[in-house]
Image 1: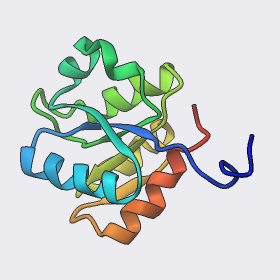
Image 2: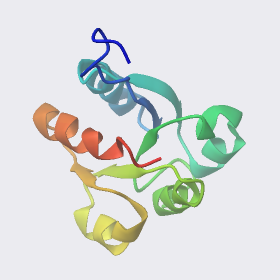
Image 3: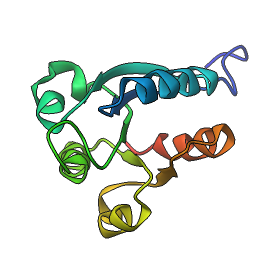
Length: 127
């Protein structure tokens, strides 16, 4: 490591699993503002599992209810089995609490930029 790279963090490759395109767009900007990269997105658990690039990531942001039903918790479990940490992004805190063992945190909707940036740091060093 050179003195030029000391203290420089590598951007995280973050995947977004959300069925509302406006929220995906908003999250993409929040990811970039936090210095990271949107590595892909899916609107359902089935689309996530069909995407060959979905496991080449550092972490994921997962909504509870997706295009194929309440499959966000399944997506979080699938990611966890592969050593990929995830965070729920949801307005359904009570449901997120039921599946807290599958994620490293919860970002509550509506999303607050400062909370988002703080929670996304939980994805670092977890893979």
